[in-house]
Length: 128
Image (cartoon, rainbow, N blue to C red; front, side, top):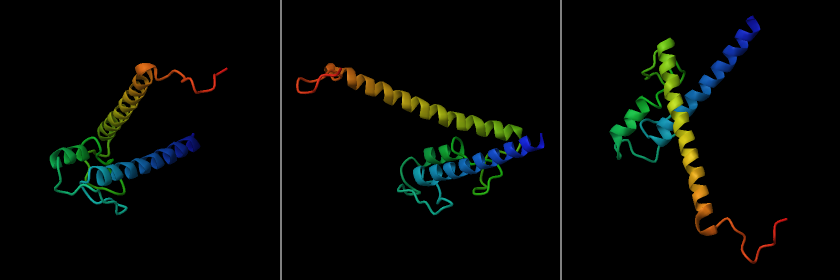
C-alpha cells in the first residue's frame, strides 16, 4: 500500500508542476498580466485593452494552485476547499476547450455540406 501512495503522490506532484507551468504561460503570454517565471512576455501591454477582464481571468479561472513553486499570489488555499475550487476552475477550462472543439467540428461539417462541397468533381478519379 505504501508503494501505491508513493506512486500516487509522484503522479500528483508532476501533474501539479505541469499545471503550474501551463497556468503561468497563460497568465503571462496570453493574458499579459505579469512577466512569466520563464521570462515569457505577452505581446499585450500591461496597460492594454481589457485590463480588468484580463486580471479577473488571471485571478479566478487561470489562478495558480495554492502552495505552488512559481507564483505565490493565489486565491486557493492549500486545503480541501481550495483544491476543490482549483479543480472547478480547471474543469471550466476543460469545458471551454471542449465547447470550442465542438463548435469547430460543427463549423467544419457545415462548410462541408454547403453547396455539395463534399461531392467529387468531374476531374477527380472515382473512389472505389
